[in-house]
Length: 126
Ligand code: FES
Picture 1 (cartoon, rainbow, N blue to C red):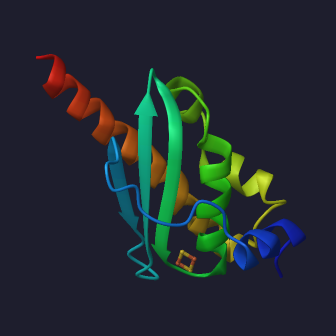
Picture 2 (picture 1 turned 180 degrees about the horizontal axis):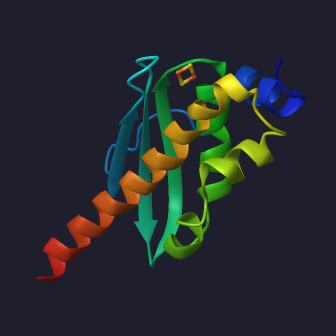
Picture 3 (picture 1 turned 135 degrees about the horizontal axis):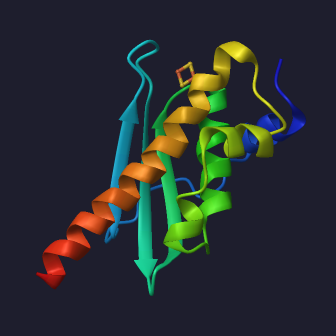
């Protein structure tokens, strides 16, 4: 059912955990399955210096969270905003149709974390 890449990221997920002094945090839940995924980002000079995730989710959610952090780490904010559920699913070698929503969690949580960072930045500047 799952590609080798999905299985590799599920068995050995990258960047799992929290960033205690995160610049931004984004959390997304899926109303259908009830799974939750949270992304933490550390931003320095407009670059995602560190990205971590935690999830109460299925194998596809774990693999998607892992792949999203790998794709986002070291990218500029603008580059990270280009990461979509499609990017994540393709990087994982595809997801079964009934598991595509799982890749939404990670991509959306990353976007929310960046929004959170932007709001904090705006408050700091003003
Ligand atoms: Fe809910 Fe995969 S089944 S995130």
